[in-house]
Image (tube, rainbow, N blue to C red; front, side, top):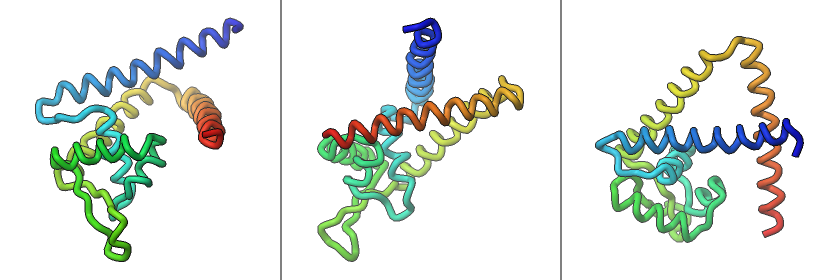
Length: 154
């Protein structure tokens, strides 16, 4: 690896770890929240559709296995954050929806992201923001295409 690649690798790894650490610490500091980051991301995924998502939809959205999602959804249902409702049209289909408590927690998580983004954006000039967005868009596109390639080889 050349010097740029070494620095980029270090920054990617460190940034990823720091973001996870900030989220974990924020969640753990809440005395009323009994959720992990993974569970928070499940709630976030479910919130994308008002009438809920199926287990398959959630697994596909988060790129995790059906059994893992099933177990996690059952835990979230037991904790009172989601409910499972049979589809009116196809009784074999089950939609997962956020409960009132799930919506409240998800809203708090979204607010956390908004604050984090606002505070971070204060650190950059207008020109730096434009360059940063272009760079992160390329980064996202690169990893998105790699994830799709890997998914095809399964």
